[in-house]
Amino acid sequence: MQKHLKVSAIKDGTVIDHIPTKALFKVIKILNLENCSQMVTFGNNLDSKAMGTKAIIKIANRYFADEELNKIALVAPHAKLNIIRNYEVIEKKVVEIPKEIKGIVRCFNPKCISNGEQVTTRFEILSVKPIAMKCYYCEKITNENEMMFF
Amino acid sequence: MQAKSLISITDFTKGEYLKIMHLAEDFEANPNQKLLQGKVIATLFFEPSTRTRLSFETAINRLGGKIIGFSDSSSSSVSKGETLHDTIRMVSNYADMIIMRHPLEGSARYAAEISNVPVINAGDGANQHPSQTLLDMYSILKTQGRLDNINLFLVGDLKYGRTVHSLIMALLQFENPIFNFIAPPELALPNEYKIHLTEKGIRYFEHAEFTDIINAADIIYMTRVQKERFIDPVEYEKVKNIYILRNEMLRNTKSTMKILHPLPRINEIHTDVDSNPKAYYFTQAKNGVFTRMAIIAHLLNLK
Ligand SMILES: [Zn+2]
Image 1 (spheres, each protein chain N blue to C red):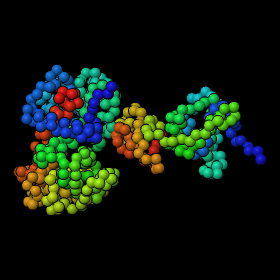
Image 2 (image 1 turned 135 degrees about the vertical axis):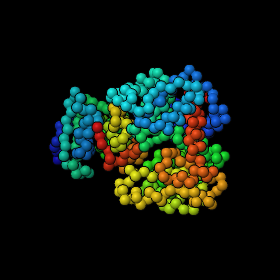
Image 3 (image 1 turned 30 degrees about the horizontal axis):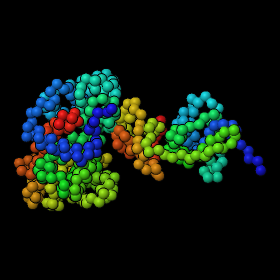
Image 4 (image 1 turned 180 degrees about the vertical axis):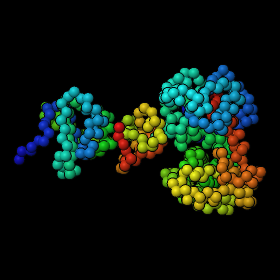
């Protein structure tokens, strides 16, 4: 049986699969794909056995450092990455929430200096499931259900 | 390299706490030591706090330093819309140290990142005010002769009271503290602190009533119960007169017991307590000057 590809294959580059549909555009933003000059294709609301629906992104001729990829773990904790060379998957990766998060997320505390002036936010991850992170500046804890992305 | 700053009470080690205590004792015995001769200290008060500012400025004057700064942001370039970032960049080029108070939480940590001279946090919103905690510790040490084995009663607003939270964190560095928390349920100590105490195996007790349980206290630390903390004003009316310390309640307390309060008080300590030798809050405020001299001398490596 031939598998029909909903998002066309790439020769070389990175495929990010198993992105929650709601997180697709956040992932695009976090990886700054808006400013990527390479071919970027994506599909959303694709059928997924594990997730119901999912999103997928394929970026031609781009490889990312783990550090950069791990930034998407906050919005797509179960993302699976395939590194492609000459149409072959040469490496598979999963993402991991880093110990420290810079930028990406706002501090939930309206009285925090990071919401008062242009400061890059900085958090220490206290727990992963559910996510709890402590602001380096105001020392308040932002929980998963309070996370707001830039 | 970033200069050594004091932003949160947990920035200091136990060794540094003890050094500050030792220096404060030294400054109290000999308050006029001109260690800051030729130095300029900036006191930047983006919101007014006369008491804290006067205490710091007295400390600087006693040490022979010069002061630049402002006492509220309306009299500074901040009112013209200058960012904290730019104010700190500029002032850290002028002064040898910055002492700041700011309404936004985390502002002092941010300033310390920008500044190339030490920053002392004199209050960042409801977050931290570490010099208050060090003067509380100095007051405990002076009156009890120790920081170990202290039975501490904390009364009033334990939910939002930053001085309460910082004092708990600081005393955890010492042997065998016992904590007693007296507060209305609406203003009880946040769970994260209780979990932390339990994890560390520290004894603590919670009480809703303010009764003769205080007879076991070495220190009673009173705080304000502020009306604006209550969502329902009726709840405030119910508790506002419960957590008031009166002289007759002190009859069977330990002879060595002392009452502390970060001041200003509203009505939570009745004025009939003031003449009781167990009332220590005015001396405590005076201890603040020596403690702040010690912090400044320590951060600038003058002692
Ligand atoms: Zn914050």
